[in-house]
Image (cartoon, rainbow, N blue to C red; front, side, top):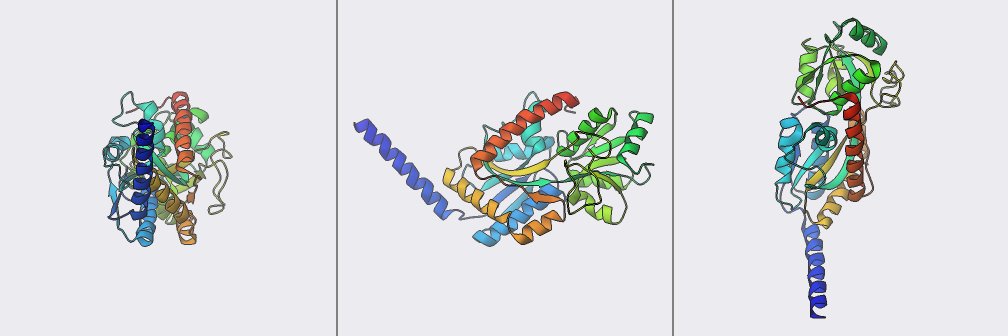
Length: 323
């Protein structure tokens, strides 16, 4: 009986400590790690959420860009951080869902080393080409690639990132072979596209939009399964000649394993609230980034596991390899 009472006392004590931690949280600045260089959709999403958290809680959110190792550098930093809720990472498809299938060894486990916090958005990618490329449609890209095998170079924000997978899925479904040129983020890849050093990218809208407006690049298609109302005149890749093509580029927040559940719940609730704010949705939608939240941190954890299983099959079928 004494053991039972002692166990109960420990459980009650942990509940009280957990609740107190959440009530007082945050007491100091929060660090949000991003896995790519500044300027892309993940960076914009994190800074938007961070600004709103600062306004709501009165504590500064520090955005820390840590590119490298196809996301492994930043993921490992957060994995090893103190599990107190003051260090988060904005995980994306590549580092969270794809890397486990690309690498035999990773310095982190995206499921067991982290606590899911909140799925935040889906980011739209667009197929854009340099104007010097003599194509004005997806079908013409396919024809040009088949006539010039291995001579089209496409950029990406990193091995296993959504833009890389989109291009490899395109290769597979269209029966073409384009050469991959990985970068440490979408922004440097876009600089090389505008400069004519590569021919095309399946870029995030947030990265491509300034150059789309000035026509320094040519926009051919979007990667979602359906057209989006913000860009109604841009067809999907699927309807443009590659049936079955669809890529949903998502971002979500994770914390180190062991953060008190009440702190995770507080973060989850606030991030989900932020994603409903009119000014946030309007700003992000104009950049092709759309709120896509889930009801609980547990639901996000299940989503991550499902995505890992899904992209293991995509990686296998597309023949993607770590470079």
